[in-house]
Every structure is written in structure tokens, then in C-alpha cells.
Length: 123
Length: 112
Figure 1 (cartoon, one colour):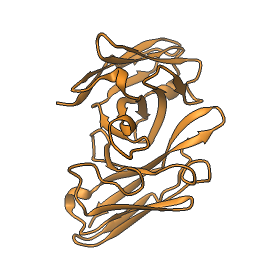
Figure 2 (cartoon, chains in turn brown, blue):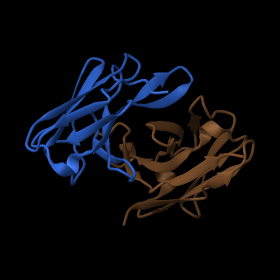
Figure 3 (cartoon, each protein chain N blue to C red):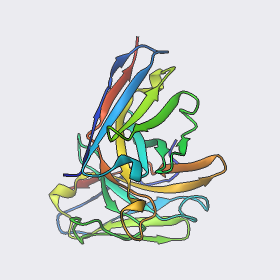
Figure 4 (cartoon, rainbow over the protein chains, first blue to last red):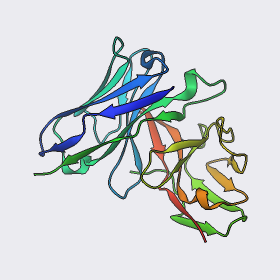
């Protein structure tokens, strides 16, 4: 079964750090483009970061310099290292697979999503 | 911050057709394909439409998408109670700083 499972969320004080994990099954993380998307309570979706199959990484301006996306090919797992956390980073964080390398004619849509992990930044 | 604009709400009775608009700019919808996601209450988003008008396997053909210029739309025909959810359009944006995936503001669909 193709699925993504996020872990690592929790309550963290402002200025703290947290690392989220996203374990994949049924496909290979390193062979796909993978993104993190977040959703603040009661708000819409916000793209956070992407890592390409070749290893290039990109970030939303709101997290640039504070968050780092990475992957462990041996564990088939995606990560999001979050440093200098702020109250406005409070959200459910989802990992998602981009379909452009697995679906003919696709140009980059998120076809597989995890269940999400909640990050709360508060003192 | 959302770059794509959607109406906050839409509604219809069972069996009706509902349309949701999504307005962007030349750097996102005008240059790239549009995707649509459905988010049921308390669940993760689900891909509904990709590449403007393609349905992933398992998505009913009641859902259809289209794009023209810098705007796109999602149509739900034969509205059903289980279609009550939030809907988001999205597209990659050709930012000078690198790829940026922008979501719409979201539309809550209510089945009356």
C-alpha cells in the first residue's frame, strides 16, 4: 500500500527546534519530488518546502533560513528540521508526494498525503 | 499568504451543479497547470483534479476542471452530501527565488 506517515509533532516553546519525520511505504522517496505543506488551525493550506529527486531543495519565504528539508534513502523517510520556531508556525504539517515523475502528463500535483502531525509553538 | 483567490463559500441542493472559481496571475495559473484538492473535515487533503482537467483514479467524473488564461474553475455536477468539504485550487508559481507552490484561499461547499 502506498502511504505516508508523519511523526514528531508536539508542543514546543518559541525559539525551540523540532524535527518531523515522514515514513513512506509502497514507493521510493528518493525517486520522487516530496513536499511539506502546513495548515494553521482554521486556516488554509500553505506550501512549506520541496526536495527534488536530484536533491535540490526550495522553501517558502516564511520558513527560509529556519527550516531544512532532507531525506534518508536507507530509511525511505523524509524530514523537516524546524529551528527558531515561532507562534505562527503552529499548524498541522503534512508531507506529500508530487506526481510528476510517476504519472504521465502530470506537472506537479500532490497525489499522496500523510495524515498530518500537529506542531504547537507556545510558551 | 494565498496568491490564488477563491470564493469563501458555495452551496447547492443534492443533484445540483456547483462551480468554484480560482483567480491567479501570469506567473502561476497563466504559466502552469492547475490542481484541485478536496479536504473533508478533520482529514488530509485529497487530490481531485491535476493538470487542469485530469482526474486521478477513483475520483468520480462528477468532478471536472477547466482553465482559461489566469483563471480556473472546478465544477461538481450531481452534488451529493458527501461532497460537503473545503476545496482548494493550487499551482506552481514561477517565482524569481525558485519554485513556489501556491494554494487558493479555499472554498467551503455546503450541501443544503
